[in-house]
Image (cartoon, rainbow, N blue to C red; front, side, top):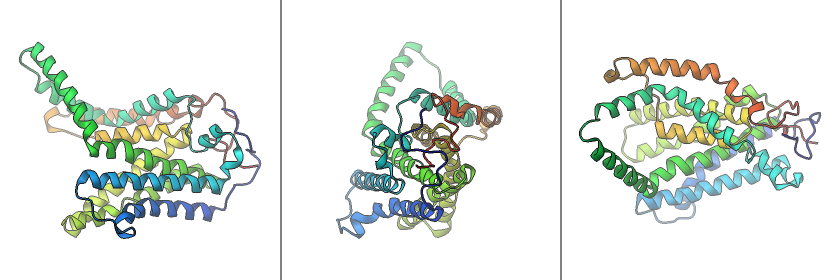
Length: 314
């Protein structure tokens, strides 16, 4: 990939590190705070249904994401690049090597879910029986009905569209460039940026309390969620830095939301799921760096000191 106009590998970091951290913290706070703005600040009446509630949150997430992108572009001077494609590329929004950026991270991520696949296939095989033709028709009808139900399910849009796209835009596409331009090392960014991502999920503790869940149970649930979001955040930041493409962490995010927590073991599979999980995990770590080599996602590398070259501005 050619170095975008206006970049120079010998130039100093674009912004102070403290400014980058402060901006990331402000984005994390605003991403959560804006969700409550319609009721708390604008004094809108409470939504009367789950659909209305989530539609309102979708709009808030879109506003927060757009504001974060504009703030990032301003802090990094992205407007000076001139070419719109170069501006988008700063955020990892690229059309080149799109197929590689989708397929390779998806296959890599699926290795961790080898136990989950075995468990689901086992359940499918145990329920198989009866007339084959009738079953094929039945499964086809069920598939069509499930697709129709999914398209009409507001939670599907929340978990597989709005949350992955807006969260990856803010917590990866905006924060990683800021931290890179602030002079932070890539290894530090991979472990630092998920902290903002996990803190943005602390509002779940407040929401669980409102739903009547006792404090200790709420704390346990949110603690597990925070641990999971930190681990996923490490992986998503790693994918974004290595591939330089926003679609890679988005695909991984959607897939993980669909699969949930990996199946480590299952009594019904008699240890097969455990063996599959172990084997898949070993393959995942073995292929983690080879499958995310920047050479796979760029036409050429310019010997930049970072994944994209935009952390040293002219």
